[in-house]
Image 1 (cartoon, rainbow, N blue to C red):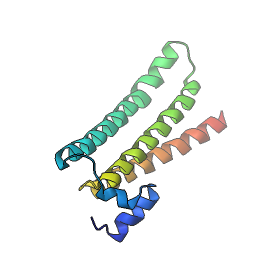
Image 2: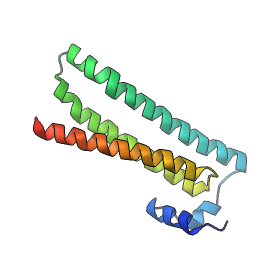
Image 3: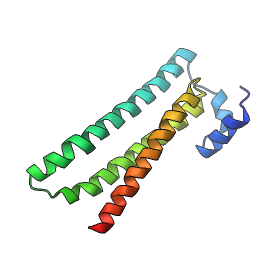
Image 4: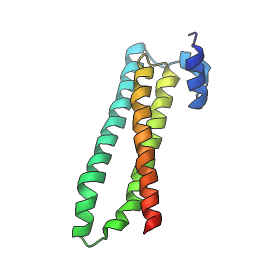
Length: 129
């Protein structure tokens, strides 16, 4: 598989051996299914994170007697796990040479920018306490 310069650059940024993209274990259908499962899992985690972060934690923790400020470290951890999850799903797409990796990169980049902004905001809020 001859990779473009952009693919090679992304492979280096994602710490993927660019030669590994041509070596996919198993038949093409199972590789594609594995990539789509990685994407589905990543999106399900992001959805669960949003529900937890914006619907459950702000209301549930004060009810059980934990101050709302105590949620910030939990939210920071959730954001960190979400960013790591996105990074590893991108690595998987580049490793197997998934056909729609560039489309997912756009979605992942937008999600990473939002997560970084929320993380910075939470850190600033944590410092103000």
